[in-house]
Length: 421
Image (cartoon, rainbow, N blue to C red; front, side, top):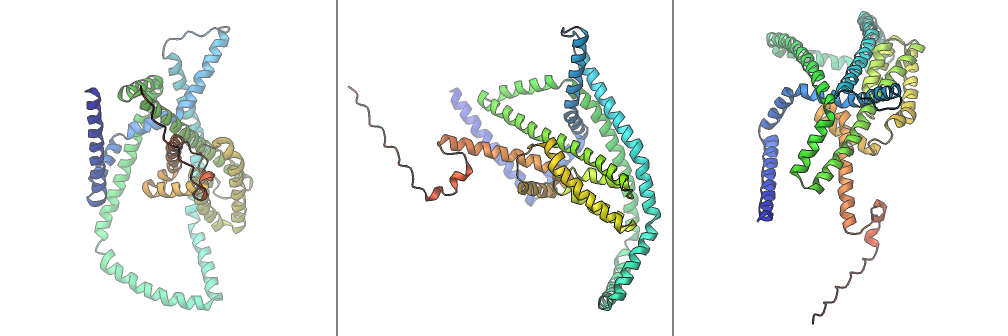
C-alpha cells in the first residue's frame, strides 16, 4: 500500500511539473510574459539577499584562511594545546578582519584611482575640440586626395541632409517636449536607482555577515533537509553534483577576479612605464573587461587604443603591442596558474557559452555563461557515462567513430531452463 502511494505521488508530481513547464513555455512565447515580470519583481525584492549570498560566497575562503591563521597562532601561544574559545568568537573576529581588509583595500584603490580617473576624464573633455580638429583634418586630406570619394560623399550627404530635415520637422520637434519629460524622468530614475542599489548593497553586507557566521550550520541543515526529502542514493547524488558545481564556480569566478585584478595592475604599471595617456582609465577598462573570457581583452583594448590614437598614433602602436604581449602572458602563464582547468571545456564551447549567455543576460551572462555551461557539460558527461557503463560499453569517445563498421557482438544464448524434480 505504501509503495502504491509513492508511485501515485511520483506520477502526480511528474504531471504537475509537466503542466507548469507547458504553462511557462506558453506564457513566454505566446502571452505578455507575465511569469517573467513576476520573476523580475521577485529578483528585485530579493536583491539584498542575492548581494549578500554573492559577497559571502566570494569572501568565505578569506574568512577560512584568516580563521586558520588565528587558530594556528593561538595554538602556538598555548604551547601546542588546542585553544579554548567561546563559540562564535573566533568566527566573528575572522569576519571583522576580513571586512576590514576589504574596506582598506577598496579605500586604497579608490584614493589612488578616482582622482586619476577624474583627471583622465577631464583631460578627455578638455581635448575634445583638438580631437575634433584632428579628425576633421584627416577627413579633409582624405577627400582632397580622393576626389571620387568626395563626390560620392557630397551626393549622399545632400540626400541625408534632406532626410534629416524631414525627420527634424515631422518627428523631432513635435516630440521635443515629450523627450524633455523623458530625460527629466530618466535623471530622477537614475538617482533613485543609485540610492536603491546603495541601500541594497549595505543590507547585503549585513546579510553576508550572518551567512558567513552560520555557514556550517546552514550547510548541515540543508543536507539534513535534502536527506529527509529524497532517498539516500538520490540525496548523495545531489550533494556530489552540488560539490562539483561549487568547485567549477569557485575555481572560475574567484580565479577570474584575481586574474583580472593582476592584469589591471600590470597594465597600469606598463602604461606608466611607457608614459601612455589616460593610464588609470585604460587600466580600469582593461582590467574590468578581462573578466569576460575570450572577448574581454578585445572589448577593453579597442576603445582604449582609440583614445590613445587621438593623442598620438605612435603611442597607440606601443599600447597595442603591449596589450598583445600582456594578453599572451595572461593566457599562457598567469591564467593557467590561477584558473588551471577550472571549467574543462574547449575554446569553441567557451565562445558558444559567451554568445548565448550574453544574448540572455548581457555582460553578466557573458561572465557566468562559461561556468554554467561547464556544469551542464559535466552533468551530460556523467549521465552518458553512467548509461554506457550499464551496457558494458567503452567510455572513450574515439571508440564510437568507426563502431558502425564493426560487426555486432554475438548475442548471448538464453540460459537453459533448470529442471525441477
